[in-house]
Amino acid sequence: MLIHDLIGIGFGPSNIALAIALDEQRQAGASVNALFIERQESFHWHPNMLLDNTHMQISFLKDLATMRNPSSPFTFVNYLHQKGRLHDFINLKTFYPSRHEFSNYFAWAAAQFDDLCVYGEEVFEVLPEVRDGEVKLLRVRSHGAGGEMHERLTRNLVVSVGGTANVPECFRPFKDDPRIFHSHHYLHRLAANAEANKIAIIGGGQSAAEIFMDLHGRPNAPQIDLVMRARTIKPADDSPFVNEVFNPDFVDHMFSRSAAERSDMLREFRHTNYASPDLDLIRQLFKIFYEQKVAEQARHQFLRRHEVKTVRADANGVHLTLYDQNGKQTITNRYDAVVLATGYQRAHHKALLEPLAPWLGELETDRDYRILTAPQFRPSIFLQGASEASHGLSDTLLSVTAVRTGEIGTALLAAQPAARRVAAGAL
Ligand SMILES: Cc1cc2nc3c(=O)[nH]c(=O)nc-3n(C[C@H](O)[C@H](O)[C@H](O)COP(=O)(O)OP(=O)(O)OC[C@H]3O[C@@H](n4cnc5c(N)ncnc54)[C@H](O)[C@@H]3O)c2cc1C
Ligand SMILES: NC(=O)c1ccc[n+]([C@@H]2O[C@H](COP(=O)([O-])OP(=O)(O)OC[C@H]3O[C@@H](n4cnc5c(N)ncnc54)[C@H](OP(=O)(O)O)[C@@H]3O)[C@@H](O)[C@H]2O)c1
Image 1: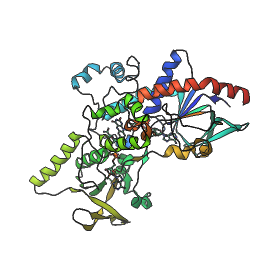
Image 2 (image 1 turned 180 degrees about the horizontal axis):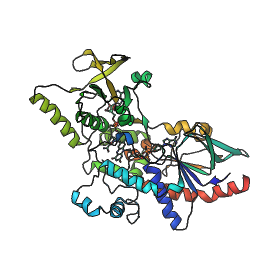
Image 3 (image 1 turned 90 degrees about the vertical axis):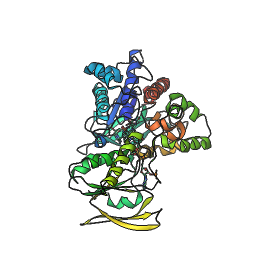
Image 4 (image 1 turned 135 degrees about the horizontal axis):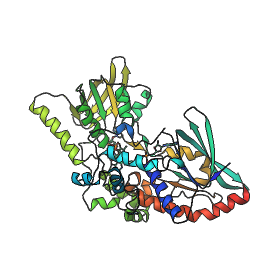
């Protein structure tokens, strides 16, 4: 069986950027035999949240390559040039392209690595290959769309699987109810609820706000309750000094601090990213609620400081019992559909790597995003998007992707000769 130097799980922006960084290394004479495995049938970037009138929350300069290598052919500017839109884009006078356009840019970059990626396979576990008391290689097992199993061997691994839907406890028993769904499935699941007239959105972050605007503009004019437990909606702070937490050198700063100081920083800067829509979007929401006051028609409700206590579903609808912390009262509302815009968890890598647990400890990563392992463990395993606690808030975003993948590429090459000797000698 062919032994890969690197297998990457997932082919979203993080691993596309890594493929670009490795391609640069290859052109400089350092070749790595890499393969990426993606569960979707073709490249898509958060397809169920690809809503009209949404735009990037990050400058286009934080694309797949520019921050590491502005002369890369994989920059967003070169993409625009190739598509003949550079002049028109300049005239838009924006740093924030639409999500449709950035998604097309990612797809354009991904397509240039079609020979390095197998689509339509979901990795479900990674096993150790033990020889002479040492883990020398990793066996990556995946299922294809038809259920068939595939196995591949690799010297190193990079896990870049993104987030998984965070579903609040009280909604978990309803995972098969088509009327209750997470924002991650929004467009697909809404299609099956096209007639829904009364919809609750749970959450007060960017996803909740975007979905509110999307539903508000739908032709069937549904009535929407925006249900959140916070006191109000606060905007993402993207002012320049604060935004320095997303600079690549802030990763060094964060990583060099004690665990206590790191958690303080995450708490202090949480609202640069989480539960914090763009200010422009908040203004649009406010205007809608203001206009319904003018019209004296209370179509939508903003239920702040409301906690979902219980959920009941029957043929008549989904019934949410909500505790109003301000009014100190409990109400029960009936909905045709409920959208959980309740954010994401970052734990999928733990399940995939579970069989390696005896060698991996707490899954702590070093500065190069490599999991700290026991001495008898030869492969390097890198994590992208799962090191927020040690590397900072940029970790789950695109902010440092170009720089991070350069760092991983360099660390991988440094690990390469030893790994190759082991594989050639012992297996
Ligand atoms: C709606 C939305 C909009 C966003 N907009 C921005 C933005 O404007 N700016 C910003 O900086 N960040 C944004 N983010 C954050 C987002 O995390 C990053 O933009 C980016 O998607 C991270 O790339 P990634 O490759 O790490 O993860 P993902 O994009 O999530 O890609 C992970 C890939 O791994 C695949 N995968 C998962 N598990 C497996 C498996 N077991 N086997 C095989 N394949 C698997 C998935 O199918 C997916 O293609 C947004 C997030 C959301 C949800
Ligand atoms: N245009 C874009 O570029 C775009 C669009 C969408 C998303 N994103 C990005 O995607 C990431 C996630 O954003 P998001 O809005 O999906 O998630 P989020 O920012 O994590 O917000 C989740 C919301 O759900 C609430 N919530 C979580 N658990 C809950 C529970 N058990 N009960 C009730 N409420 C609960 C949170 O409330 P509390 O604060 O009370 O916990 C918060 O209001 C962010 O990085 C965001 O920037 C970007």
